[in-house]
Image: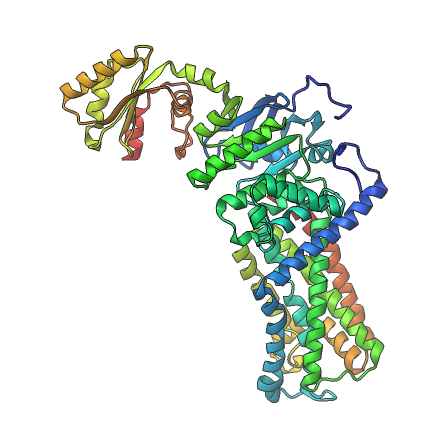
Amino acid sequence: MTAIAEPIRSPGPGVRFGWAVTDTLTITRRNLLVWTRVPAYLVFTVIQPVMFVLLFRYVFGGAIPVHTAGGYVNFLMPGIIAQTAAFACFSTAIALAQELKKGVIDRLRSMPMARSAVLAGRLVADTGRMTVTILIIIGVGYAVGFRFLNGFLPAVGMIVLAIVFGVAICCISAFTGLAIGDEESVQAFGLIWLFPLTFLSSAFVPIATMPGWLQAFANNQPVTYVVDTMRALALGGPVEASLWKSVAWLAGIFIVFVPLAVRAYRRAS
Amino acid sequence: MSQVNGVGQPAILVEGLTKSFGEVRALRGIDLSVPRGTVLGVLGPNGAGKTTAVRILTTLLRPDGGRALVEGYDVVREAAAVRRSIGLAGQSAAIQEELTGRENLEIIGRLYHLSWPRARSRAVELLEQFGLLDAADRTAKTYSGGMQRRLDLAASLVGQPRVLFLDEPTTGLDPRSRLGMWDIIRSLVADGTTLLLTTQYLDEADELANEIVVIDHGLVIAAGTSEELKNRVGGDVVEFTVPDRRRIGDAIAAIAKIGEGEPHADPETGVVSVGVGSRGSDALIEAVRSLDGAGVETRGLALRRPSLDDVFLALTGHAAEEEDQTGGRRRGRRRGRSKEMERTAS
């Protein structure tokens, strides 16, 4: 590593790339450390989704008729996992808004570190966190009767898709956090778009049970495509149509929101 | 040292810097020059443009016009080199409260691309220098306000900056922490760091800065040493408090004759002051007689050296702490504002 005594020489592109990687890892490490220090974060990322599993499995589940092998718990779990991945991104926006307000982002932007690292480190840490949560939820799911019915690799594929979906939502969330910049507003705004998006989908109930005007929305939004794909991967059934649409939606989200988030970070004040 | 910069070149050079936010013209063309190893105090009320200037100089904001060089590097075109030369501590403590003091500094060290062992030893050095070693392994959340600000200042020094920007470093601190902060800042300056310090506190600029620029409404309205600025007020000041606010008008009338300039009164605190030039104690005696004759009760009547408060008043026509709600510009009039201020306050 470069000595601090001679900081003015401009580093070459190779060194700069190396810094971008180490800076991202440093920020990732910092974010994960913070996560372990705040009990409330653990509650939100682990206990809340577990409660959702139990609530839908034992309270609402009996009233929701589905034609899925293994019954409602198998229908439910891919939906819960997708929702968990999406809700994990609440904290992405809130943490960035907090850092902005406290001047942490100003400090980091005034330092000779890689400019991409703050966002990249945030996304990597959140991806790690999300992965842990998803694995715990699957464990809980197994305890209450959920089973993968389609073999090992499709099951892994389902988890990967859930994570990529979560990261896409995190990019939207990061943009809103940096653009709004106020913790409470960010939290309220997150509820306004994330709740309808996850609940008005095929995640918890068959769309056919909704009124017609709602079906029009629920049938054509990304969460439904992602959940349908995950369900097909977990339980078997036709994957291709919904997978193709999922990939298109996710790619679209990345193409639009990664540059927006980067731009919001550069202009953050 | 860097090869690019001549020794005589200032550490900070600002020429005709402008910046607007929509309709608001935050900076309307300011010039600054800060020689190496000196402290510039940028003094001005809230909204004067101090923070905007600091944000431009630390590459956080792009100026609309003019240019700014830090250590000879252009803040827009050579932002990366500027970032390698500077440290910044803003108005709030930009630290991660969930992490310990040590972890905060180690992470900043890693982001300055120090090796792990070097990042660790640098953190210890700074914790020791700032009296935080005992609290090193407690989370920063448990720190007092003064300790958090010290940790924040320590974080700004991890990269051993040549030029340090402190944006209102003592705002919100209790008087004791404030004095502690001053000592630390003085020791940094003794090490040869160039410092640009913004403040709303006139005594702070007086205490710490070699040179002071006074900013108001995005323009530099005065520059010089603390002594030079005080001389502009024109000598000593007679000051007293009128406990009965309704008698302020009478008090002003009573001392109007003895002052060199027009008296100034703060209708909220009841403090009345007037510049008396070099007539010192004669003027004080006259004031006592005159106020007694008018039957105005006063407290704490005294003669004192002018403070930077008086300077600000003389230069801008309004007190430094006063928010200018009217948006009107009232510069250049010396001490002629007492009547108008009473009106706006009532």
